[in-house]
Image (cartoon, rainbow, N blue to C red; front, side, top):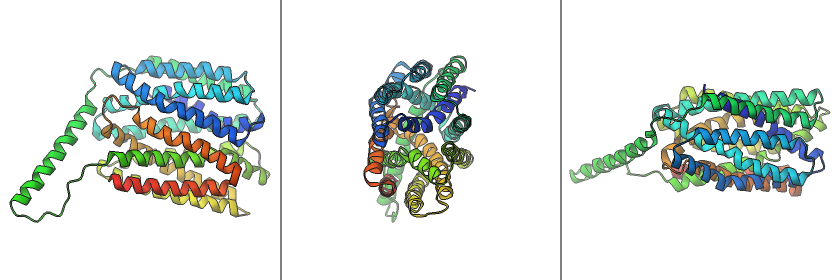
Length: 398
C-alpha cells in the first residue's frame, strides 16, 4: 500500500502533462516556448537526479525525500493558479522539476531493497502499472474538465490538491527499509558469476576442449548511451505531440478535449504493457526485449509520417500508434529500471534519471523547434532514426 501516494501524484501529472503545453499556447506562447519550458526543466533534472540519488543513499533515508517532493509540488502548483505570464510559468516549472525528481531515485531504491532481485521486474511492473492507472485517471479528469468548461485555475488547483493527498498518504504509508543490502548482494553475485565463467572457459582450454562461447562483460557505456538515445527520441516526439494532436482534432472539427481522450488511450496501452511485463518478466530475456522495443518504436515513429500525409483517418491512425507506443514504453521502462538497479552501483541511484534527463532535455527543445521550423514530418523522421540508433546501442550492450 506504500505506493498509494504515488498513484495520486501521477493523477496530477497525467492531467498536467497534456494541459500545460495547450495552456502555454492559449495564453500567447509558442511551440518554442513549450520547448524552452521542457528543456530548461529537464536540464535542471540532470544534476538534481544525481543529487537526490546520492543523498538518499548516503543518508539511507528515503521517505523524507519522497515527502519533500510531494509537499513542494503542492505549493508550487498552487502558485501556478495565479500566474498567466509565459516567462514566469517557465521559471516556476523549471523550479518544480527540481523537486519533482526528488521522489524518483528513493522510490527505485525502495523497490530494489524491499524485494529480491528475482522479484524486481514484477514489482517495478506492478508499481508502474498502478501509477500509470493513476495517470490514466488524471487524463480522464482532464478530458471531463475540459469538456465541461472548467478554467485553467481550477485544473491547476486540482493538481495541487492531488499532490497534497499524495503527501499525506505517503506520510502514513511509506517506511524506510530496516536493512539495505540487496543491491550489494546482486553486485557480488554478478562478479562471482563472471569469475566462475572465466575459470570454466580457461579450464576447458587447458584440457584441450574446443570452446565456442566467448567471455563477455556487459557494456555499461552502451547501455547508458542507449538510454540517452531512447529518451532523446521519445522527447523529440512527445514534447510537441499534444499540439500536433490538437491540430488534427481541429481539422476534424472535434473539440480540444479529444486530445485528453487520445492520451488516455496511450496511457491505457501503457497499463496493458505493465501488466504483461509483470506476468512474463524473465531476467535473461530482458536485453533482447529492450532491443525489440527500440526497433518497434522506430517503426511506429516512422508510421506517424503517414498521419501527416493521409487526408482521412489520420486521427484514428495516430491514436492506434500512440496506444502501441504506450504499450512498448511500459515494457521498456520495467526492463531498463530492473537492469539499471543491477548495473548501477549503490550511491549512484539517480544515474538512471540523469541519463534519461539528458536525452529528455535535449529532445524537449529540439522537438518543438523542429516542428515550428520544418514541420512535424521532420520531427517523426528524426525520432525514428534516433530510436534506431538506440537499438544499435542496446545490441552492443548485449
